[in-house]
Image (tube, rainbow, N blue to C red):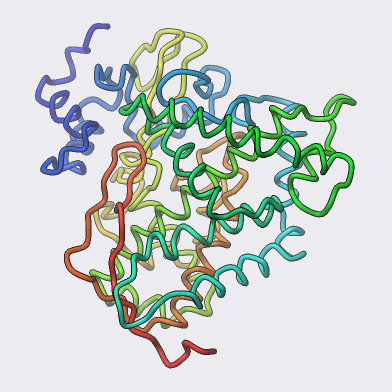
Length: 418
């Protein structure tokens, strides 16, 4: 694969350091140079074409005729065949089974929001105050993980944590860590063995949970197969937990280092729109998934560059989210940036793209919004200040990114026992 003469060797070398997550590289500067000098270029490190500008990333995500989700190899989802690989009537019909439970306004009104709020209250009530606590593990992870395991009726939170970690790291992150994909596929096999008798039981005696809905659903007059149900559950487990856990961890780290941000959130803790606006800005500024992988199914043009058929394409969401053509002062975190239009950012019409774009926009976006609202609200009621416990670890990772841990001390508010 030849390198376009428009791409300087210096830029390519610096980008290789970004993919290697070198601690001393200025990621923002490198990506800004790429957007300006080479918005589409070939990366040997990723074995893929890299797309960096907001408009080009969005165009690709909205073009299923020329670009599809990768199905195998590094960067491919380890779940199996899911909604990402479906088109047309099949996609609409099958995604609808899940959407009716976690995305529709009817689902939110009929208990989903209350269930998430209850989970957030329970998790916050278990947090220790006035002593060191690791907030990623004790808080940010458990709210989305419990939401998924309770919605599916599966329980077993501790066991699912191990599977989630393995599967979550074996998708896009395996671009730079192929062994992570091996571990993810092993975890998926373990999950399938666990789920097989559970699904069989739900086919015979369905309940109100999401697995029951999948077990009793039909497509073209036939029930969904076990493999497809397992793939859907594994997909929900990984994608449904990963985004919320990582962005909450990054946002709370920022709030610990910038107390005025936490004060802003506390003052507006009963305002859904304000909390949603903060969540949207966190997703823009601290995207938990920095990139998505696609494959060309026909030779196509991207920003004036001809990309051959059958090529892997890396869509850099982290770069698109800092594109000055779209965002004012993109390198600034502004907690109030999306006031009045925060909810729109959790739809396919939003400026930010943590949940993709086009017809494959993530079915769990509204669930993530609901989780973040209640997580921030309940923590803001209980905690007056979040103080760093020593030097806080920075964000790490190339495709999946957030602090590896968040050691803090929580100072209680007068509302702790509300």
